[in-house]
Length: 387
Image 1: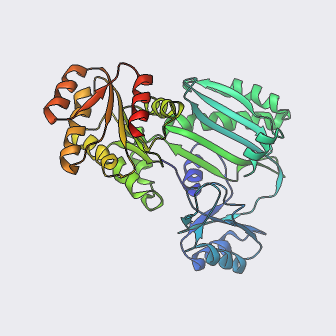
Image 2: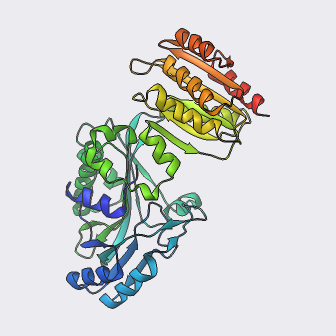
Image 3: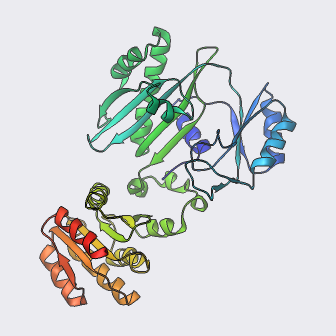
């Protein structure tokens, strides 16, 4: 679940991470009033949407007076902002963040994320932040330094000081940078984040570190123990199908292929998607069935696949565990097929708890599934069936 910039900054402030003074405005008049209260030499008016690349798309305006703040806010609020990250429809701008524009000596970039392949939390940092950081990295103009935090349960200060040294920061700035990384580590663990990024991290004329922009993504699977984070979710900025799926304990994203996928576990789901691509297929979706999903929740997910006319085959790759046995998945498919009145070639790879019982449930519901012994053969059969 993504947070808006203003939400991310507000949250990081609790952990001692500084950001420019400012507030959110819903109307141009409110934006002007905030600017008058701030009473600074320059202002940044920033569209609040859940997509990157706002600056290059005209979603960030630097102005000098409260009147110019009002004009900038009027030009943004109520308009659709199209960036390279949000597709041709763009996002509707419903609010702007009005901040003091900070004097900048230099910029940095720092991010914490979960490296799923390594099974650890990683810090990436570089000199020179900005919204073109990915392009500069591809060109070889940017060097990223990496710090592994393991599970992130112990202090990152010593490692962060070494990271600062590799970046070439002077002693005083290195200490402040290391302290900031440690604060970000604490925030990352406390809110169950999967990503925290500050880009750019500004070094002011006074030598202070400021989060000029901030991004936080919270793990959807942890929202049951993060009620405050759940309350931050802006459902109007999300796809309606994805929102409804989340309410039914499914992490769902529609793609443009013709092979429906259903897995229980994000890692298993991504691996399955990759295997389908490697076998020459094109997935119609990503669907991670959470361990808290019941058979009716699973049926909703299968219903999305069966109602999609582009779906020509379905691949089910599940591993039954203590909280979610395989028969729950089988019942979900059976219910969905009865509800929609549609069936299509369904390839299944089952393992773990109640796998045999799931086979019986498929038969009881009249689901004519094709079972495969391993993931690769299942992916190949699904691709062949979709042709």
